[in-house]
Length: 507
Ligand code: ADP
Ligand code: MG
Image (tube, rainbow, N blue to C red; front, side, top):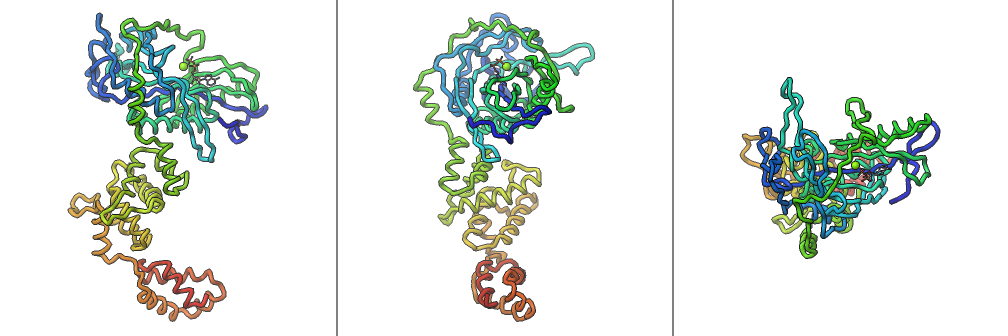
């Protein structure tokens, strides 16, 4: 963990302050059925449509651990470079709430399935920070109380009751709201590569409790923290941390003290407000669940899961940088989402000519042209009308100087139009489809110097005044290049045009 740099400090009336943040992230495990029952985890559905007798806590029902959820928790732990505990224990966390029919949540307290780990963050300013993971444990989600369905009653929907969650607890290593946001984005990215949590914050698959304290710049002791419960978007996590740090600084600077308490973030007001104080905190009376044996894992099973992990974003990024010479920032964008890095790798896969798109040209084309356009049209890489093979072909043809950058954009437009037009039978999906467009429409770049020379001679002959100026001011050659490119319909090879012009103008 690098020391706090001055840029991260917060200015107060009486000096600089540092914010300290630790996150408890709740991530819904990707699995078809719940942690201790066979009921479906499908999102939506009629209220109480996905509830087994276990989820409804009928007397005498016994929980049975879902092996798939255990496997996913272990894989997540491995993805977080964490130690896996071969023996862990499920505990009952006792409290009363209408959406909790058991009267307790089954969780893991003293012996979680995953121990300490670490996550690396590459910040936009080039800073690299390592955030410690304290633990990851498995627990059940609760149901949901509905207060707006009936004028006189509250109703309860148990569809979520018993769904498996991983609680991932960070050490208090985060030093800014930006880092907190980057940390959650990184966790989400790792879990998406692993396929262990879909990270869909709108559906509540990922939410965080944000613990915040502040201290004077240079101090090595932690201040008293407040915990902001259940923040459900990355942007709100940043705003909650920022506004809470500011509030604590104001209290301390006015001579007050911070009471440890649980707070809520109000997105409309952009501030946190108290929920309950430490005195009101629950005593959960944790004890090992007598219905469940300790969970034991064989080291060989853990090793096997480890051997089959997919390539994760950090490793992929390093490979893109080292093997392809792609700049770190660009590589970071490419690996941020598994669907995006897959698209990129498909772009540079072998084409029918036995060649491959140049990775740097492909990366630039993907990020600068394609992502920009998708964004503008409210689409994502998953709903891209142009498949990777077609964009890969465009990148290859640019690299081989078969087409100019300008023509490449025209081809892209043709492909976009054809592929989004339902009445158009001829789609542009493959390498060959792109090549056919180039051939049939005569879009090939003119590298034949004879043909370019004719155009150059003509333009030079028609502009004697500009020729004289260019001899004084060689930058004016750009004007000639523009004219030649225009006269060639964008098809002249710019390097050939430049060379010929310099020769003809005697530069
Ligand atoms: P609890 O179980 O009572 O919530 P933990 O010790 O498990 O307490 O801490 C919960 C979270 O609070 C962790 O993510 C931890 O990093 C964070 N945390 C602990 N102390 C501080 C602090 N002084 N400032 C900010 N965050 C903190
Ligand atoms: Mg807590």
